[in-house]
Length: 284
Image (cartoon, rainbow, N blue to C red; front, top):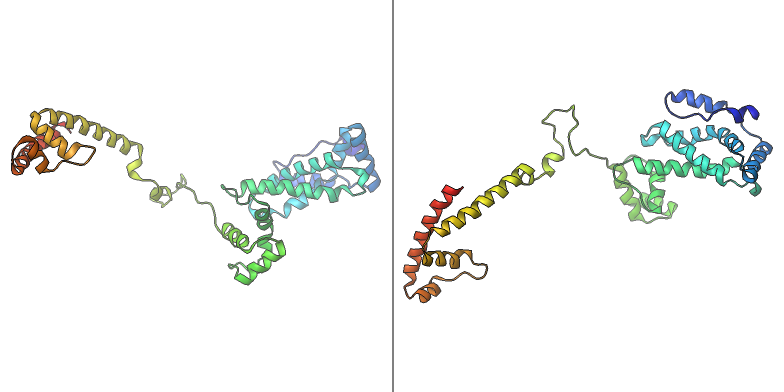
């Protein structure tokens, strides 16, 4: 046991196979040895005793982490997260309860691995509620085939896991989907079709937006200059007919205001509009 306590804690990086061989070399503890180390750590805060408990259970973490390789995440990362769970278990382990550390630690090891998988399996977190987490880690093993489940199968899974059928259906849909890159990978053809090509509104690109604002500015200034070239009566007729924020004046209303016919107002308006078009064309 003394030799075990003096050995350094291995790290699951670099050569993974070398790490696993090192972890498997640490001897298993007898129940008496485990009790002795656990009491020393609990009563005396002996960190060497805690190290002995951790090292003797590294092989357990390797075995548990191997069961989660189907999620496509690095084995080394799963082991590292599992080791965090193991250390938490050692810290909370009470030897007086009469339970072996291996039984107590499995819960903590799996909990840390589960959290790591949920954080990293997708860009968007796929499971947030207790029911969703239960489904995420059990649904694939409970499905009878790779095909979509029918209503009877969904009901059976929901009953077995104690969740609602609609939650089973939703999780199956989430698991069957995948993340899609917004833009094409750097090494791909420039013509590769990616979501960015149809999600972006060309009119809202920075260059287009700047061009639109500049055009609007020129038009506003041009409108002011065009109105300034009109006589007072023509300018008022145009403003009342086209530039008012409220209801536009009718030809007859303006005719009554100026004491002329509606046809005369229409002629003045047409002449003013023609003059303004020329001024606006020069401004833009």
